[in-house]
Image (cartoon, rainbow, N blue to C red):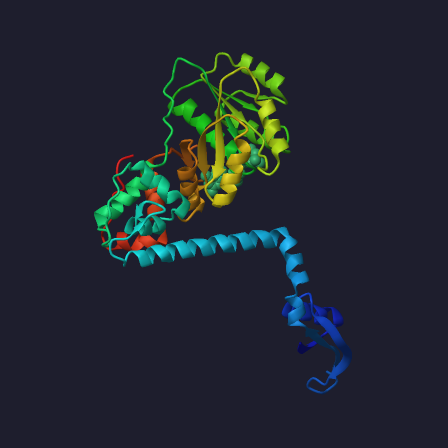
Amino acid sequence: MNIKTFIARNSREALQKVKEEMGPDAVILKTRTIVNEGLGHGTAREQIEVTAAIDYDAALSPERIHRDYEDKDFQKKWEQLESRLREITHFLMALEATTIHGCNLTDLCVPRNHYVYYRHFGIIPENIHLIEQHKKGEATQHTRALSREEMQECLIDIVRSIKIAKESTLRDRQRIYAFVGPTGVGKTTTMAKLAAIYKVKKKLRVALVTVDTYRIGAVAQLQTYARIMGLPLEVADNSAELRAALERYRGADVILIDTAGRSPNNREDVCRIGEALNVPYPIYHYLVLSANTELESLLAAEKAFRLLPLKSYIFTKLDEVMDGSSMINFLLERKRPVSYFTTGQNVPEDIELATRKRLGELILRRNRVRSIERGGEVMHYGPS
Ligand SMILES: Nc1nc2c(ncn2[C@@H]2O[C@H](COP(=O)(O)OP(=O)(O)OP(=O)(O)O)[C@@H](O)[C@H]2O)c(=O)[nH]1
Ligand SMILES: [Mg+2]
């Protein structure tokens, strides 16, 4: 039992202090009013003294632990802790392995020193074998430390294992693109960037449609872009209206369709997007994801939106991440290619075609390899 006394101006403040310092399980043993004499000359004032106690055994009781474990936030934190611990264990294992002559990570079929560098580059253990599989038996049994060239090779092997979408060069056929994904990832902004590029740089006839009649202000947001760029915009509430809009846009080279952001945890909402896009036209579905999202959430989003015929990914907000390792691990694990990266809020400037060179730069942005760059040994991460 731990007992403590708190003095405050009133009982509310005293209870707050008890809660902050001893937690919600503290019990109040005694409360009394005391007089603080101050500096004399009539400055005396009344204060509250509270004596509280906490039984640490009770705070750690099986009932309490069980109650906490039922809590979703607690479970999430627990899982994160477990996964971090697994990661640290793997990493230590590999570090240790570099000192053992002739050993190989047999379960992963990866030379141990390669393994260490992959980990340095932010690749999660589960994805390392995917990279090595790609090399189809090229793996060697190095046990000495890797040279700079070999380290560059590891980097090249990582980016080579990621699929990059080819930009469509079809000019004779109308192209229809839909932008789907979780809320606030930048679907509308990305669509506006591409619309401007198609119109201004590629001189194509571009038309816009939105099926996002769900969020207040969504139509107005796109109307503003359409007005600035001088592009036609249709609002469709359902698949029949979308079909009619597409028919009206027969003469357009490119049609871009914006959709409402949906939580990946709500399957029904994702299905509704699918229903709205269910028209007898070939629609190329981009799954738009934000690079500043943790790996688990990216995988969960992909799993939910896989209900739709996804073709490739667009990753937004690369300007907001330190190293993009969750995106890189996602792309290693998921087999669809990546089409574009967006790097800021400016329309249309902040968008680029996805390249392996850019992925390599992102991997190098990790703190751990900065010293190599600083030492004048700037890495070349190979062909894109
Ligand atoms: N930093 C940064 N911000 C971006 C990028 N792309 C979009 N944003 C910002 O992200 C916010 C949301 O963008 P929207 O395009 O409205 O996102 P959305 O996916 O259409 O959102 P919902 O339709 O509500 O689901 C805006 O403030 C954009 O300016 C990017 O590449 N980098
Ligand atoms: Mg939007």
